[in-house]
Image 1 (cartoon, helix red, strand yellow):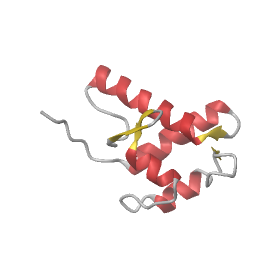
Image 2: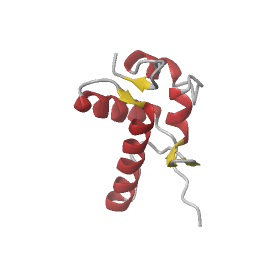
Image 3: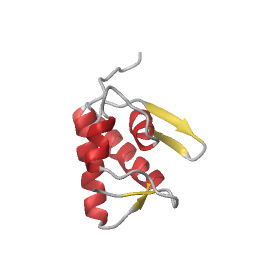
Length: 100
């Protein structure tokens, strides 16, 4: 049986911004994806609900959040790209993202 959640772009942006703020400097986008994935999994285990409602996607370096990964790549997900760009920078040439 598959569990389906609804993607919550605002919560995804808030969680990403929180991790970036706590980090205090630009972060590799893959590191941000991993932290968000782990936070989602811990929330699912503890409260039976994820933070972002995002789908998981398996990459060469392990699972990540599909919608957040698309937002980092500049693809719109449920119309959330403007919200993402308002708070999270476009990834730079070193693959870093930061809060705006």
